[in-house]
Amino acid sequence: MLVGVVSDTHDNAQYVEAAVDAFADAAVDVAIHCGDIVAPFSATPFEPGSGDNPDADWAFHAVRGNNDGEWALADAVDAFGTYHGEFAELTLGSAEFAVYHGTSEPIVDALLASGSYDYVCRGHTHERVHEERDGTVHLNPGGVPIPGREKGPSAALVDTASGEVSFERLG
Image: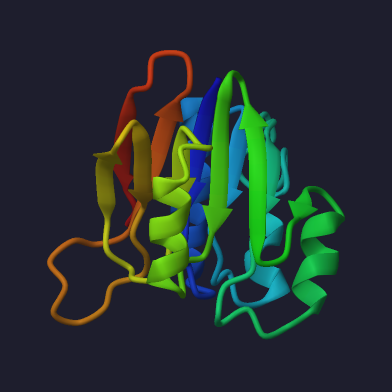
């Protein structure tokens, strides 16, 4: 199963569309947004088959970020996907995923140390992370650019069968 992971798009239409295009081009089975979508209009391009990608077909999951202030976001996502609130546990293929925005480093560390997940996907820092800790893969695809940070936004692609993780630069 191929999983696309994005975070911290912050209503930036350029990066939202680039993520949607990357997921469509890769033919992901599942798209995950790790929070900070911000407003409902930034969630709707992830609807399968919408916009410039009429053949796109994926399950969409999102968690709440610290800048997702509009509760209408939950209604927008739930219209075509699943909005999980603060945290999600997903079984995708044979892999267990924890999805959390990442505002609390101790929670991220606890999820990684728990041994319960194959992947812990998070956002918040806008910094790309791909590391393994005791058999659990820690992923942060990055986010919209923040001055002084060297890497721009990207989306992660996770092949749950092979364990391969790659990044697609957005924009």
